[in-house]
Length: 80
Image (tube, rainbow, N blue to C red; front, top):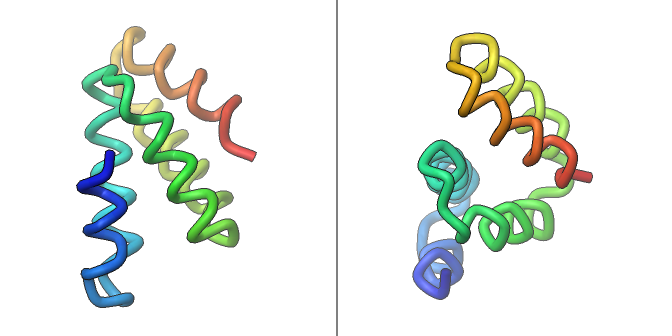
């Protein structure tokens, strides 16, 4: 997780959100524990992007199997 925090600080601002979002989605899809820390980082740095992230997760769920849908539902509950 420290690597993502460092990355969030050194990447140019225009690319930062996309990199963090992609990392979060990848961690979530793999069911890895670091997704929670990445979600918190995204929420703290980009609170205005949370509705967009929720919509993106819903779109992914529509095209996914039941295991991924369960993961996405858990994450949607945790996004504030």
